Length: 242
Image (cartoon, rainbow, N blue to C red; front, side, top):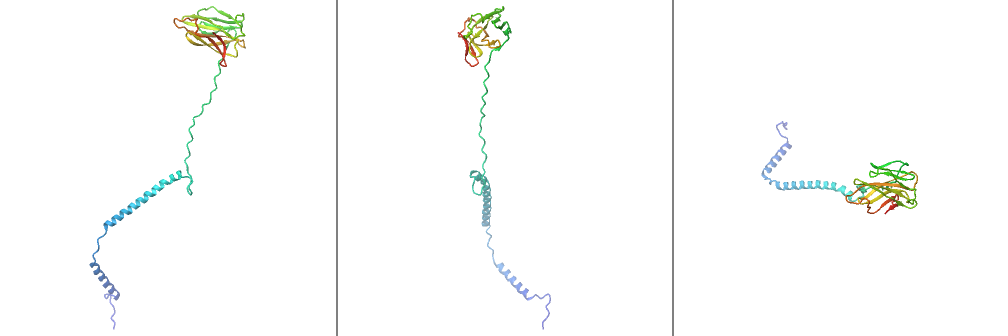
């Protein structure tokens, strides 16, 4: 006759499981575990960290080198061709040649119009010739161009000189040259003096030049070292006195 199982009675499967657990526990107590390889684990950890760091640096260098490769080796297959635009060459602008200033021409005056070179030294022209005054000779003086004393068909220059208080007043008539008179150059003991020209309107074929210069002490004011030259607008000689 079978007795009914109570809650306190373990099932047959449970008894076997408990016995197996106890047997394994006893065996585990008899096993002495070997020491952990901590040094080896630490070395391996260092190698892993070094490997990761090297991999990161290699990737960064690769990113830095990629643009350089593209620039140095443009046109590679699969890579865009990139070149830096070349700076334009520095070219200094060529200065444009300024047109030469026109050569001066004589001042055109009306007949009888007075031209004041300096106070007391005045000149005026009429169809008959040159008129002037100077501080040394305040009374009007006259030099004719129609009395036959000059050949107006041939180039020439006349000279009149007055001195007063260390200053010399130079003037004269020029005539007969080719082209248009432009300037007058006078070589004196005081050096080169550039004078001025005046003419009547039209083409009279003659004009008057004048200049003022200071004297050097002990020098003869009437001595001219070289010559008087009237230049034309082309740079040539209109007339000359030697």
